[in-house]
Length: 95
Length: 413
Image 1 (cartoon, each protein chain N blue to C red):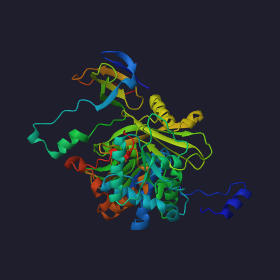
Image 2: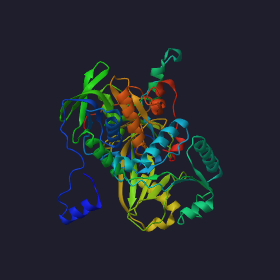
Image 3: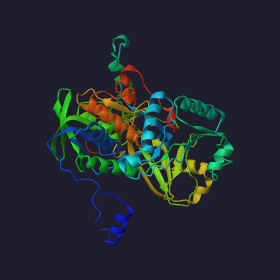
Image 4: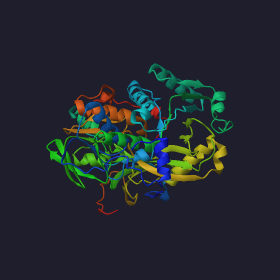
């Protein structure tokens, strides 16, 4: 069970949140110049690391704002909470 | 090792010290025709059909822990083919038909019990969706029966008749059921080993030999092993191993939980799925209830589940069967499943030469073990992709020909 610190509401139970998957995905463009392979990768290919994952979360049962987490997919530890549009923080190897 | 009443009696009289291992504990050889990574059901079945149907002599199955210790030993053992789209229907129906003959084929009792599987409808909209499934299954040539509420309650007398989600109809696939998961792994392992397949346990693949867009073997915790072809059948860890060959895949790994109750006398003799509660369950021959629900909905490699998912599943089950409120859960666990966006597997060659993929089964790989093994063996041995799995190629994520089975999977993951 996660305790997630919403940057707007403070620490709340994970049941109030929805995970929106990998963050920092850039839409390729301009559209006419994008190959099928690049477009397919943009839509479907994901990092899926065993370790630190940078992902979007929505506080669906609260302020309804999106934000980013750096979370370990092995221990579920949350190391950083940061705003949408911010660059991913540097996280140490150990979790 | 063969079993009979005679061997049972003889071993009982000699203190059960004479039983022999079911398969050889093989040592890795320097080179194989085919190396299969992952000693779960799919890997073992692929090895068996390679040796049996295609006469491939040198085959190895590499398993980092023990045979059938991953998702093959962690699933809820449901076998069914009540899919919606023709591509999936053909593939999974072939698998059910292979399951029907598997005990005889392997000379190993996999305890396939065709007790039927009933999907329920709780609202008018559910009913329309279920009617559409009924029509699709009929068109796909998979036999199914429409049940009125009285017929549903006749099959499951303990089902809640006055609950939050009333039963409006049921769709039964009579030939669906459950099988003993360990027996499927052990039966394939024994049969493959007898045909000369090397089953190598405690052998973790750490990388690939080769380079420049092709693989020529694997490096393992027990040394390098050369191979003409390598097949990945590692479910939730596919992304990790494929990355070592420079391959990124459209897979996200999640934890999926399952639950087993204490054993009770027979209370219902089918598999039931309720889309409204998001729960399905069946009763084993031993009397335990085997219960499954939705994924824990964020990426995870932790083989444990979250408690609120446990609460949701238990609450859903009690909505369906209030009489089970005094039962205790004996076990709860999670397996790591490889989910792709269209809920259909990825089967066949990869962009890396000589590297083949069997992955993306997500929450439902057990039912596909015989068909996955059969078709991957054909693909590996002949070089031609088996017709049944042509639609499940990795290229569909580039050309857009997805097989979106999300609705027919039953549980809204």
